[in-house]
Structure formats: C-alpha cells, structure tokens
Image 1 (cartoon, helix red, strand yellow):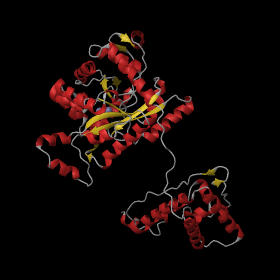
Image 2 (tube, rainbow, N blue to C red):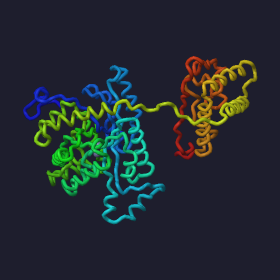
Image 3 (cartoon, rainbow, N blue to C red):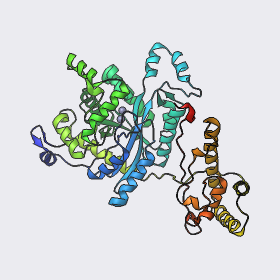
Image 4 (cartoon, rainbow, N blue to C red):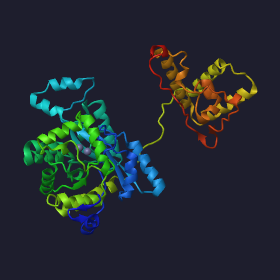
Amino acid sequence: MTGRVIGMDMKEVSMKMEITGYEHLHLHSDFSTLDGFGQVEEYCVRAPKINQNFLTISDHGMMGAVPRQIKGCEKINDKLGKDTLSPIFAVELYVNRLQTEMTEENEGKKIYSSLTEIEQNEFKSSSHLLAIATNQEGYKNLVRLSSWGWTKGFYRRPRVNYEQIKKYKEGIIFTSCCYASEIGRAFERGGEDEANNMIERYIEMFGKEHFYLEIMLLDFKKQKPYDKFIVKAKERYGLKIILSNDVHYCNKEDSHYQRLMLMIQTNRTIAEIEKALKEDSDQDFFELQDANLWMKSEEELNAKWLSDYADTIPYEIFCEAKRTTVDICRKAKGVQLDRSLKLPVIPDGDDKLKEEIMIGFQSRGLPKNREYLDRIKEEYSLITRKGFTSYFLIQKMMTDEARRVCRDILGFGDGSQAVGPGRGSCCGSLICYCLGITSVDPVREGLLFSRFMSEARGGRSLKLEFSNIDPLPPDELS
Ligand SMILES: [Zn+2]
Ligand SMILES: [Zn+2]
C-alpha cells in the first residue's frame, strides 16, 4: 500500500506498530478455478520481497498446485539461497455434514431427494474449512481428504463430511476460516449462540491443539462483526488465533481482473452491478469480491489494521494472530514428498522388449549386418541393466495407442500423423526406432546412442510430441 492511511504514511505506520513476523497461511492460486487469480510462480517471487519465508497454497478442495509450489520454492532457493522459501501444504476443504460416500454418478441427486426440506437446504451448501498439514502424515491426510471429495463426495463441489475429517485429521491444523465456513454461516443464521455451538463442535472434533480461530481484515461488511465475535470466542474458549488475508491474487492491481473472473463464475456483468448499486447503494458487493485480497506485506496489514480494524481487534490479539502464523509455518516446515518416478513394472519385461525389438527390426526392413546387430545388443544390454525396460515398453504403448486412435477412431490414414518423428537425443536409439517410438534410423543418420543413454550418467527422458488432430477427417472439415 502506498500513500497515506488516515493521515499517516507507511513510515509512520511502521514506526507505530510492531513487526512481529507474519506468514500467509490462506492463499488461493489459479487452481481455485474462477476464484483464485494469482499464479504460484508470482507468489514465489513476491514472498521473499515481503519477508515471507514460507509459501502456503490453500486452494479450494484440491492440491493440484503442489508440484508447482515445490518447484517454485526450489527455484527461489537456487537464486536467493537455501531456505529462503519453504512450501507449506494446505487445502481449503469443502465440508458438508450430510454428504455420504457416493459410488455412482448422479447419486448426489438421489441423496438430495431423500432428505427433508430443511436437510435439503443444508445439503446444498458447501462450507469452507482451512486445513494445514503440520507433518508428513498430515500431508497424506490432506491428499486423502481432497481425493475422497473428488471421487466419493462430489456434489457441485468436491466435499468431505465429518466422518472423513475425523478419520484423517491427524497432522492437520484446522481453522475457523472465512465467513463461508460452518462457523460463519452459523453466525449469519443464528448469531453468536449458534456460532459458539459450532465452535464447540469443532473443539470436540479436533481438540484445542488442532483447532485455531482465524481473523481477516477485509472490507466485506460482515467481516467486522464476525471478527469481533471471533475475538470474543478466543477469550471464551482459550483458543489460538491466526490472521489471514484469504489471498486470491498477487498484486493490489490484480483485484480488477479477479473481479472479472468472479463475474464469469457467477454470471453477472459490471453493468448489472452498477445498476444494482444505483438502486441501492448499501448493497454489499464485497460479498462478491473484496479489493483487499492481494498478497499483502506485514506492513500493509498493519496499515489496514490501523485504519479500519483498530476498534475491532485489540492490538495484542492482532500481534498474537500474526505471530501464530509464523509458529505454524515453523512447525509445518520440512514435509518431504516422495518424488520418485512411479512406473508400473511390466512382467517379463526384458523378454517382451527383446520380442518387440525383433518384430520391429524385421518390419523396418533393417539389414542384419554387424553394425546394426552390435548396436541393438549394446543398447539392449544398457537398457535392461539400468532397469529401463518397462519405461521403453510403456513409451511404445503410448505411441502405438496414439496411432491407433488416429487411424481407427479419427480415420486418418495409417495414423502416423499422431506422433512426430521423435525429439532430441532419443532419436539416437535404434531400439526406439525398432519399437516405433521414433521414426529416425540413427545408424543411417549417424546419431549416437550415448547422447541419449550411457553407462556413466544413466538416461534422459524420452521427449515425444503428440499432434493435436482435429477429430474430423480433412474431407469432412469444410
Ligand atoms: Zn473461504
Ligand atoms: Zn479462501
């Protein structure tokens, strides 16, 4: 934030307020479809600039950003030094207590129609619940929960129920989350009493050690009374509290684009909103989007507190809520993922590969001279010794299948358009040529196998290109 905040500039703000340390724990990337606008890589670049040592991504119901999150942090660490940025894994789960395990398509509709009218209303809503993994088991449990949501609990959104949460809660910190959480909805519906009941239910489910309250400094009109309530609940139940900013985009100026994106999601136009505002200027369109959801620095959050929230959240609690985010990150740091390549092992792969090579050698019409036969032997011996047999056979299956679909289903001649001739060093393999993975004879072209694979450094990956072929044959396109 630049400029002045109620007669104070940023310098004055920082002089007046303590820098406690702060880490974003609630952050959406563009994997939160039509909601999160920021890209993982932008967040990675901005994080060290605003003194963040951790990057948490908590997308809606999914963990698709994890590979990019890890790579993004590694790239920053390569550039700025080890331990500059560590990933923290999280999900903003969708919860519905009435969601049951579904095995068939459209089962959600059946469940819905079997419910009472009151239950039907409840079944329609998918409440938010922030879940942060604090150790290895916690990470696995996040994966289990989000996978269950997509495969068994999908009704409009990937959802989990209490049974699943209880089953896989280990190693996870849950928070009271945003206004769209069960606690926020209870507050909206029945005020403090109902919201307190919900908090008690969560304490019972997770224990005080694993359930934290969450406050946000937003312009959304209902946020202030809600934060006030959350602060009271903290005193009442003695719970820990975090500050979050429900980050949806990286820079302040991206707010405009995220708003447009949300309009696509909710089927509204700017003209409609302007008209509604003219008719009733009190309408709260922050409910649709808040202009505060960028990746703020601690100083920017301090300024926001000072200008808008000093009368809502006591200073000590505000500082404590910031500090707690750092504590959580320190605790949650160091989760290691098994990133080894997991390929199925094809039974009797070595024999199968030999067989396929012989068939290909024949059909390619290659000469049975010393040069070719020695080359095949050399390649075969290295591939089998290095344990790459299954890898080659799987690549063959992929290229064969691409040609088959192209030929039999799409009706394109012999299907050869589906796969290019081969890219890079894999064209140096005669076995790839025999298997039909590439269509370049490396002996004739004078290409070396050692550029692709050698005893000393193992192998390189096979880079294949599959054409994007229009499903209609050329004569039917017009
Ligand atoms: Zn939310
Ligand atoms: Zn969120």
